[in-house]
Image (cartoon, rainbow, N blue to C red; front, side):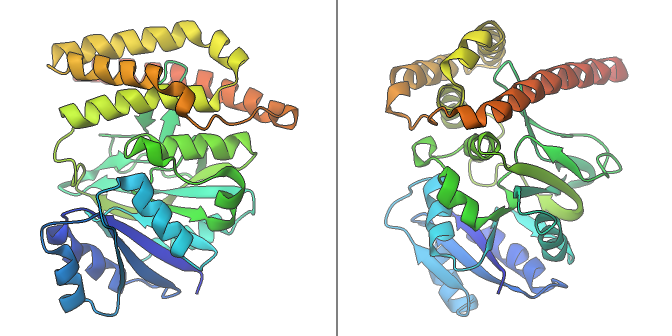
Length: 326
């Protein structure tokens, strides 16, 4: 057995049937399924026991968040690869076959992100992997673009953990998902760490996933998500950037936080964003900062170049979208 598909669940009983049904129809059968339940109260565990008794379920005693749930699953898995799959997804029949083929291309690959499509608008991309920028913004590559886009396998900044495959042995070297994040930006954080250690994160356009989006949190923007994302963005930069890199990037990061604050003020979440930034700054020293090693200097330089490139790429894409709408 090569792959364990780990499905974190929190009150997602209504999503489980279509998700698991799509996994039954895979062309590659070299995998097993593990559901990690974050103390659901909607009968998810009972449903799994009655309907899918052959699937292993790990029931946590509290809702510890996404990061803790998937870490529990990763540590429990005995396979060389793990796939993290949101419960609000269905996958194409060739999904696991394509993901396995992609990650086995090189031992330097830490993760592979799939081509995620919007469940109710499958002609549009939900995510083609994640980008990270100098201004401290994590970007879902391709969101809202036609499905015909992003058809070429490519190196990305990090994989979207909603439907990605990971090399389990790499976690022993770089560390697991940061459980202090609870949820949000934890996938960019672990992908960033992997790049510091010299691993690659790739994108596989042949692995198709249909994603509802915000299936657990309930909406694109809410107080909980805005505050946690703001807090975690501070920690992400503080942990992964050495002091010199933080100094070099201070102005673009400050501008990025200011623009986001103004945006969230406009849509009614300014206080939540400000509170998240404040909490992140006050508690930053409690984070597990990645120790600087001179042997990683070439990787830091490559990352800095990628941050610059992603910033200009996102800005160009943003202006093109605005012009196209007009």
